[in-house]
Image 1 (tube, rainbow, N blue to C red):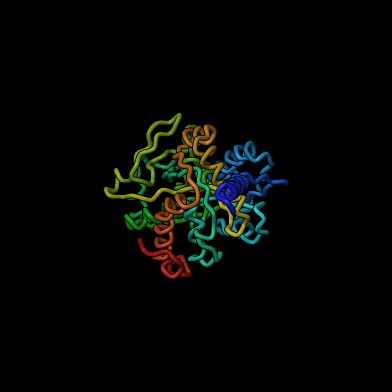
Image 2 (cartoon, rainbow, N blue to C red):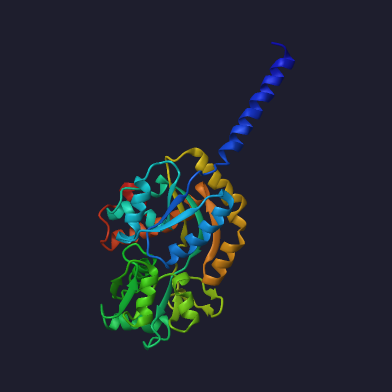
Length: 335
């Protein structure tokens, strides 16, 4: 074989590899995709997932069907996605810190590394109270919880939910005791507080935003060391202003695809995240209007971003006696 012939073959081989790589990034679904939201309609996961799905439909050229399947703190709907055929047509969504702790709770044998992560926003919990309660700031509410252990009711979306985690962080930092009332999602928990069924909620700002703007909830603080500027309301102070040194890791939300699906599905979504979602104005506007942080990432970067919250959540649940499995035995070292 002469040098010219060898060179042509080498170029042809490189072109074939390049064509194959490009093809792997251009998966075109031929039927609707099922996207399971393992929480009730109207909650934080449902809200951002519907916005994201609408944007993905434009790029993929295929319908994405949202299926709400709440129950067992999100593990029922997540299991449906995990058990579905690994053909790339069934995804799920939610908070990565929930996904990463199901195995420690004994509710679902899966780890964060069993999934391809495609993140959209980071959400912040807010302490919101019914306006008819006397609490004007976080200190007053925490002092009341200490003075009346287990009497003040707090609505959450159940164990592992953002609201539950927020209250557990507060309880750990202050010694306060509260009465948790669980619902099938963040939206029902917020509605319960608005109606006076509970005194407070610690669900996400995105779930409380409209009620805060409408003065049907009084926000006392973010469960964070950072304030939150909410469009149409103003600034909600951080809990660290009341509890110096308090902090909580960012709670990332997104779409999750189980490992084992065709590589072309994953590579296509990874490309879409880099080229479209990372600069998507619909999602950016959603985040600004709802009090969330626009923070798209995927794959390795996403795994790295979410792990601090997975660690904090898993160990907080373990130390409060709510898990069946020690986190360090399932790949979650103590932070």
